[in-house]
Length: 121
Image (tube, rainbow, N blue to C red; front, side):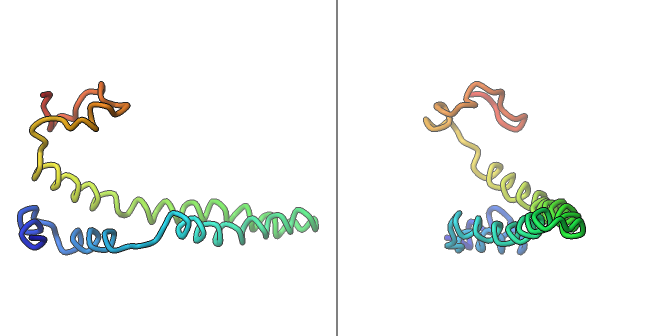
C-alpha cells in the first residue's frame, strides 16, 4: 500500500526520504529543546562570564555568536521549505476533501477565505 501511495503521489526520492525520516523519528520536544539549550547555553554562559569578569572580548564573542547561531538555525530550516511545500501540495492535490471535516469547521480560522486551489462547499 505504501509503495502504491508513493507512486500515486509521485514523490521524488528526496521527498520520500524526508517523509520516512519524519515518520520514523521517535524523539520528543524535550530532546529537541535539550539540543538547542546545549548549543545556546554555551554562548549565554560565555556572555555571562564575560560580563561578570568584565571581559569585553568574551562579551563581544557571545554577541557575535548569538546572531550566528540564529542565522545557522534559520538557514537550516529554510532549506527545507521548497521540499515541504512540494510534499504538501502533492498530498492536497491527491486528496482534495469533498466536504470539510468537523475539525476544520471548529478551527479558529474556519471563517478565513480558502486558498485559490480549493472551492467552498
